[in-house]
Length: 111
Length: 407
Image (cartoon, rainbow over all chains, first blue to last red; front, top):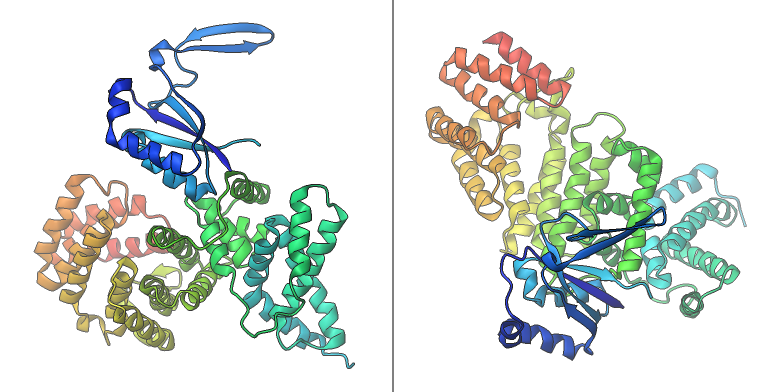
């Protein structure tokens, strides 16, 4: 099954891309993803301050600044992975370093 | 072929429903991967049993008969609406299975079922409902009634849970060793809640206590090497043994004042034996400790003979294994009885100051009881009044009122 990991945290710290590339914890996670057949795509998002939200209601487009929902943790990135089942996906998500600082929401993909 | 007496068949079907329902459903889910088909076909197989067994006699292995009948119905149902590739695959699997398992050894699928029902990805209430529906065979209406919920709400909860199992890819299996301890804890929590929901009740919800014990017995048979499963079963048996004496004429009776001759001594003996089996495995856990505490009470010939130092030590162990302010409160009582009321009272006051038990009626009720024993009657009266405001049930309120009046 394909799952999307929504990688969330409260954005109090924001390591640079270089720091993430050289962090052994991230390297361990990447190795595990590769071992399972690799990622089907993913992205790290810039902090939520750079976000803009669009809604269309009654044909009218409304644009507002900020995130789509008022939550403490924001989606900071996504990863699309193939896993055998939910337990497998949860085990992989638990390896992601952000699972220890924020949380990872695991969502099955509509296939 | 002779006709079997309807009451004999009725009794056989009832017994099979109680003993085999979970197994039939579990096997059908294993074969089809479809929870709704499994439940429908199990239901139909039990309905068919009534007529067929009256005509042909009760089969020697009712469980195997019912599983085969349910499987045939699943094949018919899937043939009728074979649309997707998944259904064709399910059908192929179903048709390959021999009609009657050749060996007496039918693989027990119930473990897979219970671990899936109690998966932490499901909301807790849904785990409880799903376990009662698929393993214990309670109807949606019965479960709704037991949890004081409207039937459509409960039906919706079950539908959502089953949908999540399929859509999120919750595996239908006994978790591997590295996941087993935590998952087993989740299963035991569900069984204990089912038991507790029925424990205090006199009416229809009483059935839940029996279901809890029945499920714990089944799990203990299926996982003989897990001491906490036996610990939980022992705890349930020891609590159930004194249930009848917990109220008299609708008034709560405390352990100290219960008529011990009314305790069920066969259940106590079974509970103690079950606990001994668990303890012999030498891997202690919170349920075994709670059962040991219950056993201390259950085996004391009278209240004065209670081994309070031992109980205080067990509560200290429980606080270490599963810290909670409720456990600390119980430990304070045991210390009051073992070392002196004032020592225990100081611990209770400390707990009260921490605010961790605010709104919990047993906090003022316990303080009141210890103050009464110390002869501090004015303070005791205030505490009893406080407890009366918070007490959740009528028998408890009546007990507190009687205490307050007798000061």
